[in-house]
Length: 376
Image 1 (cartoon, rainbow, N blue to C red):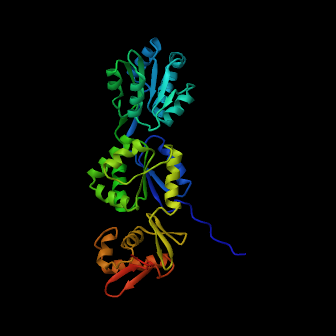
Image 2: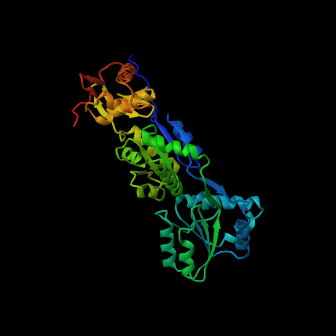
Image 3: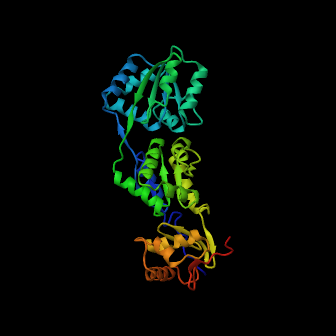
């Protein structure tokens, strides 16, 4: 009976950056189970306010004078508020104060946190935007009503001013705020590698974090390279929802948005990209070939490669059958400007790793090309 080698994991050879502090460990674990090499590079940190006296003062104020409406903008923020109430022996009093309030959720994650805390959401914004929340409450009318707004770390999104201008009494509750990245060096490394082809995907879970990562890329002068790689499909930029994706779109970066605004959906969109044929691939005389940062998929078989081998093959892949000179390929080697002999040695090792010479063709006195079938 003929036996076949098992298929490689969907993310074999992929290096994935999780540019998130919030639940970054959960994302990394899920992606590693599918074969990816993952490292975390949160562009911002979350600074919780559980011990912030202002948070506790406003919580006590709401207990003494309960709100008519509670707006929940983030699941993690609302859970943090409830946790802070528990830690300071205010949970039962806060639950009683909010028991008669109308709950408005900015999206499904906020909705889930409301339910988890034992309350019922009366309305949920489908677009997951504060603008839609504002439109809903403007149409409903809020004059004379007391409204508690749980903010996310980026601020009020204009809700305080809008609802206050409509005659509401607004109480702002900020449960966490954004701080500097835990390790700026890792963030810098991530944007440099994303532009250089050493990363296959970058994942984002918050708009402020995405915006800061874009700024880090601009400071490192790699934004144009990232933009080209993303546009060509060689780099997947994936966001948990349209709000998170907005700073990437503003920077003209091609971005994939998770279908359901959940971390599980974000993982699925990454796996689907690399497993379903969405990632760029070419048909060679040796089979279908797809280049990843850690090696190559050739006819369904994953072949790990050295950094030099991946760099050479990546250049030939992008050339799509055109001939590249030894000088051009030498610039792609890790130290750049390598000699013709270094290129020849790298090609020889690459051919050996790929099981023969058929994938890469030598064009006498001109250089090398990928043996692409029917190149355009």
